[in-house]
Image 1 (tube, rainbow, N blue to C red):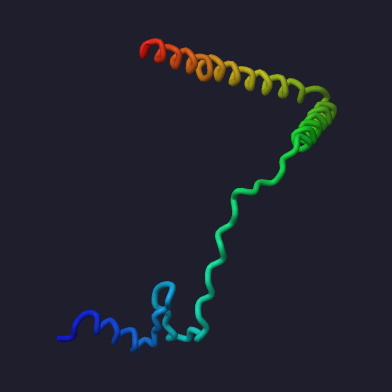
Image 2: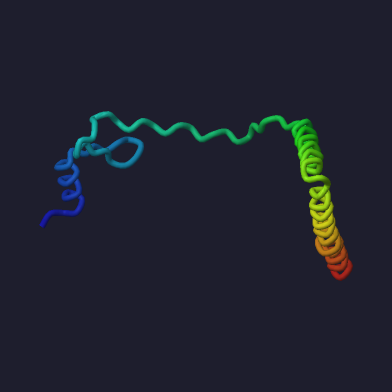
Length: 117
């Protein structure tokens, strides 16, 4: 009976595998080239962030206003109704956030601080 570590070496030799210094075995069989595997590139540096500018938001707002005005003219004023309904929905969402999100969170946190004291 052959020891397991000797058997592994026999299998690796039969498949023409070499042990690499920095990782697993590299085998040269089944049409693979004899070139070693190139090292992986270094991980990207996520610390540097591109500079942001307020001009992006300004230009997006100007483009949005231009599109709204153009669509209002093209639809003979019917698109302004759609814009007003959309603005109303967003105002309702904002009110819900202020009431149920921000305000009640402050009340809840202040109540816990008062109970702990």
